[in-house]
Amino acid sequence: MNLFLLQQTQYFKQDDPLAGILILSAVGAIVVVVFVSNLLKNGIGAGKIAGGGGSSPRKFSVFALHRTAKEYNLNRDQANLLEYVLKSGGVTDPERAVANPMVLDKHFKRVFKQIEKSANSEEEAQQRLALLFSVRNTIEVRHNTSPDSPSAQRISSNMAAVLTANQESYSVKVISSKGENILVDCPRNAIGSLIRFPKGTRANLAFFTRTSKGFSYDCQVAGMADTSFGPALQLVHSGRVKSMTQRRFRRRQGTFPCDFFLVRLEDLKNKKPPKMVVDSRRMSGSVTDISIGGCAIKTQNSVPAGSRLKIELDCAPGVPVAVLGQVLRINRSGIANTIMHVKFLKIPRKAMNAINAAVFEYGAD
Picture 1 (spheres, helix red, strand yellow):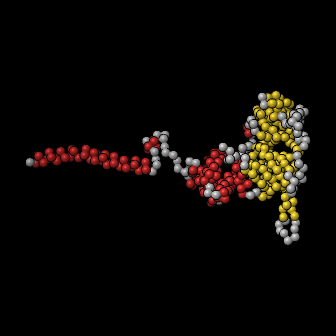
Picture 2: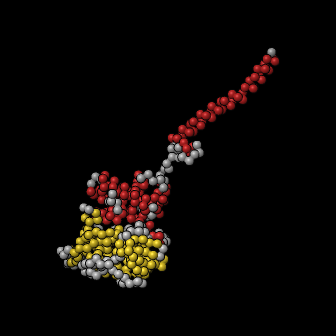
Picture 3: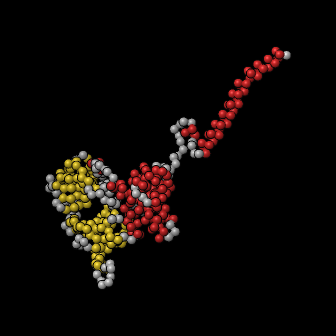
């Protein structure tokens, strides 16, 4: 009997380790299943669990958004709108997106189109667009005031530039730029004839980058050249790029036909401020570049510096704009033309939104 009991005892002692292992394995399997299920519910992909390269999309970093908003001096309403713009576009890294003007404009243009289509009224649309552009311009100001080292690589083909020679300024386009040599289309006078500069003529070529930062080269005329684009002026520069005065807002170069009228102030008794009276004489010209801060107008009309003007133009087909400006300075352009540099004094909200849309090219398809 004792021998039997001893055998039974030995039997159970031999089987206990195996049973324990089986039980522990079953419990472990259940724990792993529960753990994996919880991870999947929390959005972590199977590739990451397996240690592979795949992973689920990153979540939008609200913390990074607030840090970026503070860095760019955005107020609460502006920060909230920026969060919507980036979140709705699937952006996960706000800092990187805001630092890249091309990426930023892609998302702002999308929301611009949404506002135009979804607003319940014209007033609501203009109010929302004004906030949208206030965010974009605030960021633009920061981009324009950040350190940036000029480089000869900034000049690219078909870039608009301003050539100054013999105290005259001409709007030109860059044909090519290699090393110290730059080819620009040859300037023409008022009747369309080529202007030929003697070899060695000192000149200056000014241009703006996509972020509206201005740079210029001191050059010398090396001669004329025939290209597939027509006659070209060959310039040689020293390689030293000069940074021009930073502009606060982005500018757009182009040709926008405009009309303008002189505005005079009538100092009537007991009237403060003085009444503004728009002259009935209509003058015409072309806006050659524009920002929400001002514009340049090429015209054959003679207007003295300091004059106040009512300016009417179409920033886009069917989008008329009327603003009040003041002529800061005047430059000669060719034989009969002058360039008036105008500072805007008063811009209605709708006009400001239209100018911003034209400058950032959000209205274009």
